[in-house]
Length: 220
Image (cartoon, rainbow, N blue to C red):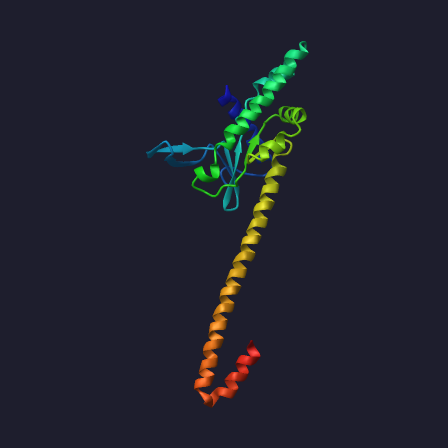
């Protein structure tokens, strides 16, 4: 069943995360989400629970591992009928395509009550199932990315997570630079106001005018 496959996918993902030093629930959580207002009924709440949420500083990365692999298994096990084998592979690709569309219709960044990375990782828990799909459709990764879905297998999931961490780090640096620029601009404006005010004082109080005028002119 899809639920069983989802559980297997989650378990494989958890093992990979643990192996790479991530800990539950400090670094990631499973089947944890938020209660949000049901868009079909404004008076009731619904639970939004992604398979896995990986912490990225102040935000989260959603990973889904529910993709069906039934047709991939049939493709692997079919040894005699090449036509039937080819049909299973086509169905495997169709299954992945459908799941990409389903995931793209779930804007977790809007559904969850927390900061979420805009793209969702679609984790295919068996490397051969992942690679066979990309081999059959080399454009699959690009097509999924255009729908804000990033395809991943056991062999590259951690590399993708590290790339996302780097992106978030760069964004944070840009935000920090932006904040520094805003603060500097405000500070400069305040100093500008103070300078005008001091010059008025110089004009009004000629007793200390020369000394204060010299201090202002040397300071700015």
